[in-house]
Length: 303
Length: 303
Image (cartoon, rainbow over all chains, first blue to last red; front, side, top):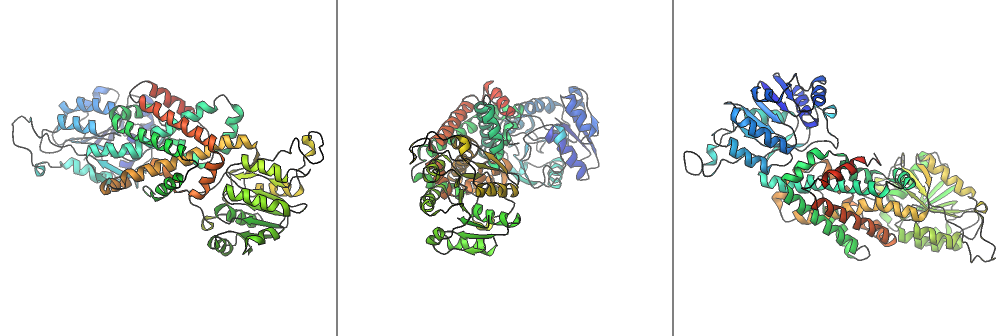
């Protein structure tokens, strides 16, 4: 692995660049972003060595590893553009928040060779605000970096060969190099099936996000016209308020694509939470509230 | 102020004891708790100098300031018991999470003298787990400590005097001493009307709590029977999950009383959040989601 191209040099993309440097990567890191400002910031902070000016330059770059670090919909676009020009031995990977649509398109576009050319990925790291300026080399340290390797098409392959044997699917040299590099970022690498990824992430990442957005928006609307109440809320609100509304600052651009590409799972978790809140509300004065606290007290995940 | 009696030596009560020592209070701190274990822990860590063995001892203690640091319902009980035995110049204060019922009962029991004898209070500090062992002298540093001074009864006083003039209501020497001490704990002292307190706290404290409980209980139930999913969730869940479910560990004993004494406000905030989540759910694929993020992005309270 001698060159890495980062497409989208925002918080995650620029952090990948910094983490590469920090891990002692001696090759070249090239960056591209539709925002000249983000790209300049990534260049200025040394997250990328070289900035590509035009979208077409990305297709000519021929990096060993191309990291798609944009929201999900542009990732799908870039996959379409890169598939026809991807050379032998090169790898495309991504950091998108949902994986089902990406893995499906990846199988279609990149799945027709024995060795992997596309590796869907998702680092479980981030901040409530985006942008290269908040990037950190240590962003992935101690977090989990998920991969959802694509399955080879089971039918319809050109040579009509029988169902592929999983042992035929080989991780390419570049895939192994990228996995090793991610481990050097300090992340725990873990493989998960793409459908399962989207199901679990709906619960542990997407639901907390839309919940925080809804709560922050609700509080904003409730107190917007009430200056005295607003000041009191500012003074009174402590850690509980901060933590449950922190993600309200997250950008729409990223979460629109999550909503569009994991709609069913997200809707299901939101509905379940609505019903659970109604259950608590209807039982504020009954012993059922005790059961709810007991169940919640048993929950120890993520702590 | 030469002696302080802390009734309820759990997290808050024991932290008050430690904060008193830390602030250089030279008098005696006496403690009582229905749990011998909590009381022993508070004594062992030096949060109290002396432990009272029996409930009756509390009524004989005659401390300058008595701090009721139990859940709200026992606070109401203690107020009833203490009112008849409270001597001149002594003060009772509390740290209960809801203030309307406490202030109302306080006005009835303690409001018939010119100088204040009861001062409802609420430090906006705590942890998701209770108990003396987690107590800290610095728990209140940088937080807000609210007081909701009781209003004198406007009618029905024994001497049938005309409506009391606010200037007649005097903070007692002991109230001033306690307020000064709380400031020395490093807390920001702020007065607020009791009804307003319960309204605002429903939004910034109680709603985040019941929400975290509901979310943690929902996740516990969803993943309880699915060992593989549970392990994946543990690996994948990051800060967003931790923060939104942290308060799921909070004890029922405290939050039962909040639910019982602020029912209407809490129910209203829960219903509003249910509706807001439904709104997000119904608009996962519409431009309305952008508006929701824009509104949430404007919310800057508590950060």
